[in-house]
Length: 392
Image (cartoon, rainbow, N blue to C red; front, side, top):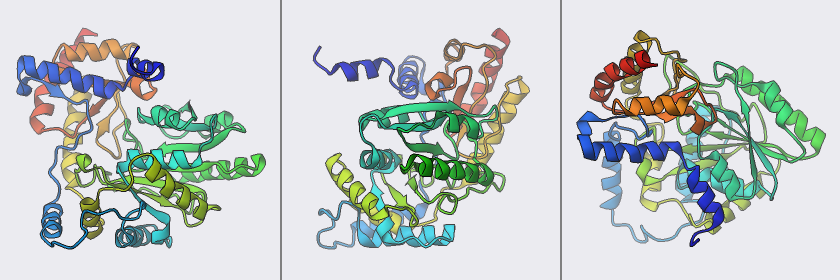
């Protein structure tokens, strides 16, 4: 074999999201893009806010010297300060630029954080359903990925998390608003989780970090509030991406925000700065760092996603699908009418509808639909959802 055995094995269980995306490309080539209804990939379909392009052009045309040169691995100081000021205002916790690291998106940020804290054999826990790539990220850095089922409504099951913690546990990764369910963890449940991690860290004489993956923080509906975790648990790390809230996933820009109350925050900062370099990211993209510094708090029109959510949910509900209405993100995670989610998703493919089986998120028996798509995609797919439900 010309590639590593490990990567070969990974390829056989590669992300269902990408598999369905590739399936969609084949169907579109065969039937035409307008005849294929692709809900497989969380690829924002709204254009970035106009101010994004305005600031980008302004920065490009400024002709400042060294605009494309290396900068500190953690990012430009003025960009980190802008991010810190915004978080401080939002969270009511005083964050400085010395707790901010600019990263190549949230994926880059999570890998940097895990590289900085994991020793071989350390365990990382995540509630299921979970983002499909977490297991690969943990494995990248010698860790072991362990999952625990959530409650039936996809809220945190603290008792199960507690029973999964061992002397090798190094971190818990949470994702709220959640991909794939759209569920938002309440402040009460997060406080309970924080208390558990504080107790276990003291008992084991070992810091257990809480990593909060927050690319959908600003995409919430129905006046839902997303609590900040800094007051909830001291040894916490927030990872954020601008990919979703301003629709620039291809620009690969995000940040890590270390809790100012973290016991070893200086060590964490230095370790992550080093990890950012040696993982090959080196630094986050220069131009886009400068742009996001100028537009902190700006988002796309979230009401558009809410409208699409309501349109899809109304259609699915009318044909008997069972699901939790998402409070955030842009996914619906219905229950399959049969136990075999892969078979059911294949049935949807026969109607040219692309979804992702719940098995890819650690939750067999469900399937994920990304509603960051055109209205026409939702409207034209609804009859097919009905036919597949009737068939099964």
